Length: 295
Image (cartoon, rainbow, N blue to C red; front, side, top):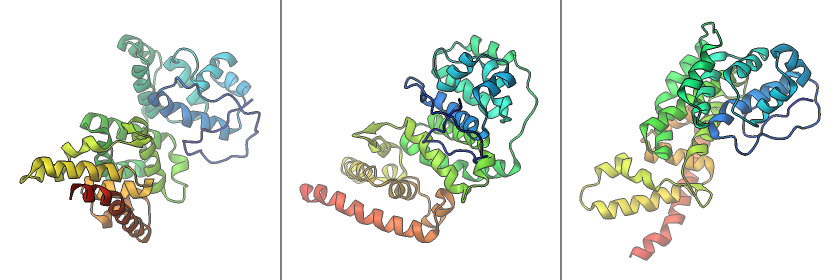
């Protein structure tokens, strides 16, 4: 038996491994931080062609323990068994350890338990590939601005961006061979932000961002009127299709120049221009009834 990849994580390259019957999915009770490392690890298990018995032989743990770990079932797994599985797969340890630690806190594990788990495993120093380091330095600022628009606080924005970069390191071998690494990484960031953004009627809720944007801070003559208009605008932006919303958020909420956006989101300049054009037209249609009502 082996595991199929999870749909919301980009899979590593197919190595032609053996395929078995589909397993049960990750349990619904697994939180966003738990899924952040569990989903790519499951994908690597699938693409490696390893069977459950292979992982038992390589890790030293029973089929039951490994099966529970890969489903996110039962108690949150100790670092020792998690480490054994990722080393059996040849994955980088530091990003998984940070992701595992965040998920342990999410599972309400005590700091003492987390520290004791980590201390039981001796680690060798590992550094990200140089290309990964260069990419994350270039994208840290715009990624953080985008995350802050949805998550509202610097702490939450920095945390989600760091999580994204750790997953990107974990999946770097696949990301580096994707058609466009910028698009790959942007899709990853977007999925992590949306997993934690406030939602209303199935769409991210941007209304609270009105009070933390540059446009709001610059509004002086009639704060109430300006902020009411911005609430309508941000609410309309949240109703746009994904690419249109992303371009609108980066351009209008984060203040990113339109000619810089293709480099960030992994779209060509021509497509970005078209997306922006369609977004503006859609926003006009969405805001027209509100403007008419006020008149």
